[in-house]
Image (cartoon, rainbow, N blue to C red; front, top):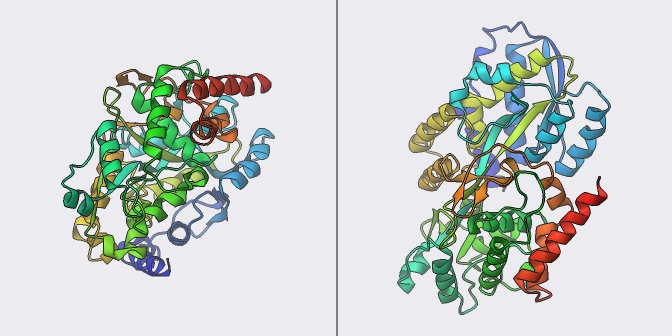
Length: 448
């Protein structure tokens, strides 16, 4: 990790944040102070964010950006009470499913003029969240789920890269031998299992909730996805019923698993922890159901302003500075391939940087990083939490219906518990789906 931090520091100095150089010549008219409550707490992202703040303040000597770091749970606890109480909350990181709830409650500040200033056509498809006709969140970064494959092992076994669920099961079975596992899945009661299961439900042709935000788990589509989860799990490492996000990366980097699904962070981890794998693995789309929907999971992260922020002009000016051009590109390269751009202009800039960079982490993984950018911005990208009921058997639609009930899916482990009922308690997929439906309905009824 220290090796990566050093490389990222070099990137910060080289790519930029060149605005610092121009700061001595430019004095902005902005003044005042805003608090920036950021959920980007990894060292690399904090390093880049602090550099951007320093450059912005140098250009605007009468402006002050106070950075406060908080993880997801702490962030929600910190802002919810203040927002609902009408406190002057400034810039915050907000989850996709929370934006709809907050916007409908009237506690977020509309960002329509900022979106228009940048140009609505510059935003990558699916990145904007429009609630009641307004943009209340600014998509500052994206991510997508990809398949990491030990291509050397597939080639040695004479196997093709799987594109469908049936092909994946065949490949995973063939590679599970001699202490190696063909695949790795999370199956603990956690958000990782929730995300993976949701993705498979969508690929099977179903939804967690309908367009009316009511549960739709007791369906053949969910049963089909659960059956696939169970069948693939038999080719995964022992102990996956306690696995969360990081375990997939560890299994792949350690050589314990030939295939894993994850966002782009695996690219940096392989470079840092398993450089011997650099020429042995490739990145592809995740196999889809044989007769399901040709979609891939893609999502975006958002910044928002509290409705009663006292200095919206300063906050919006800083947002534009932070999330466009070289600053946005530098932030994306603090986690190469994991953070993908939300603007086409930034994607173009990043592509040029990656293709010409001499930095080892970028140079040696350039094709994989570029794949992640294209994959996240592709026409197959879909996130149900921002498109409730958007899947219909063999088709999907980005309907923009934000599922404000999805937070309860995570909070009460509806999907991950369903997976464990099948893998641990050996419940049939049909019975587990029916039980999850009843549990979800009960949760929503209790919350009325």
